[in-house]
Image (cartoon, rainbow, N blue to C red; front, side):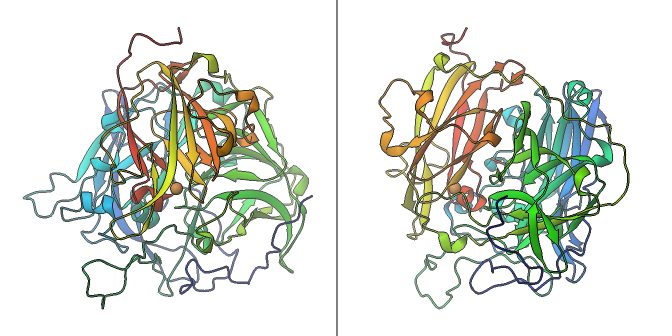
Length: 571
Ligand code: C2O
Ligand code: CU
């Protein structure tokens, strides 16, 4: 078995997230991983469940030795409570902004998207259902932000009612803040939670459920000695007599502390049986590369590999058949992995959930100084008891037909390039004329598929780092990758056979794909209903990098689904 790339020791402090900051040294593996609570509806609306969720500032005990941390929580909880939904049963949610009028974290008003939005008092929020096939008016787009608007006569803008149709297949979705220019800060402050969509078919599979199905929201955070969240500031030179701040934006954030379901360096108790974990990478920028190892806690060393992950679903729902991940399970920023782990051979053992320190950066890494390793995520204690385990992982889970490549209506060449903002700070931008027009965050819309069209989106990464590319509304299939030098944007068709095949964990339906530097990453998407998958809305949505610092710093574009053109290739 492959040894961990670094031999972790329990009390070696992790690398700081920024050269001049390191979190207080916290004893690891003290707190138990909490299971996020499930949100109860407050009533019904048109016969369907109706929820009210207040965003509130609260204090939460992140670690027993750390003073309570002020966080922002949906329903006053960090992470937010899980919303459980059934396919075919729509739900309505009233999202309410009860946050203070001052931000918890340093807002950089000089970044372009923040300047676009910053014309009001109160903290901007808007909740996006990530992975949801929803009408664009309920999507929670960045410009749909609302505040408590203290300057107005009443709290007239402090809430929004959203409607989630839930017609898509069962999946591990999540909801998080998406406000223009401050998404990175709002999510970092705590505004994220899971949204699990289920149906009877999935229930009939016999996967672990109830107390044996556990959400794991993985995030990296940094703390100050007083327990408060640490987030670096970009511009600090107040002696600077120019109007413009120092060009020192926070280009990417990596925390030095592993936080799982809102607890720092926690441990999880399990029985020697199968568990289903809904893993969400809810970090701002970090990629996780996970593997379980047998662990000797007294010496702080790992022994051999532990049980593998059996991947049963990813972003968009169940895979056709389970995939055993023998090596590392990569989960890009914002992605979900629905896995089953069988602990039955590990009775009485302690396991380490290890994260490979190496990010999936294959090319030259211009920001390598920002990528701090976080090798240890959590411990798992397997009880030494006899248990019955009636659960199973069937060899067939659901139908996932390939979107036919010969039915493509449009192939879009989407370069990702480096530029700089008004202050000379580096920007990662999207779209074909990004360099000539760096600040076209919204206009003009250049990606305009028609409903029922099939398209290939080809992300050409001409920057130095990998970017997790996300499309709202739809789920797509990853076709593969090729070196940029071998790609011809003029050529009519893509020879899928010649591409580097997707990674095992990229099977099935995805809503985020990792685009590595120097490569073109091709995905195929059908804007409409396809074999039980519903991408069937028209209107305005976003596509963007899911590294939240990049997204806030203009690495985001709209797309607009137009009505059916009546001339689709696919019948
Ligand atoms: Cu999870 Cu537009 O994002
Ligand atoms: Cu990015």
